[in-house]
Image (cartoon, rainbow, N blue to C red):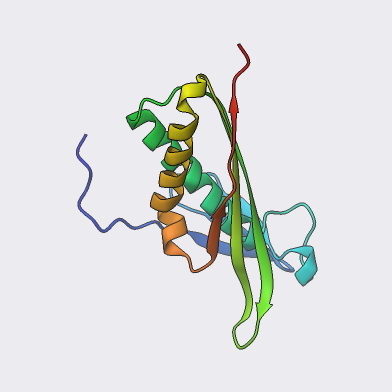
Length: 149
């Protein structure tokens, strides 16, 4: 299957529901609720733009890692990744997510692949489209584990 010619466009639309809450939609996708976080007079239990921002970095890192691991024929047992965004008030700018910590846990099948797996994780972080599109510092803090025999 041939890819369409660049540039690609990704469309979203948000519609206000009530207070500081809305529905986020994109053609062909399920709608999601979005709200201000409680710290900013928002709602508990609802995804916020701050969560979506960190989730975008995390999910992009995962899909980039999976693509590179597949091309590299890296055998692994499991992958999960926690990401944490640090929101600060920056002098002269206002609120900003200044850092995103990506904390993947990768369980590999063979101990001989530890160094190669580390390099693949680093390559995934370096090539992540979202990480490359934001001004926040992205810090990779991987945990590599060899699967039990």
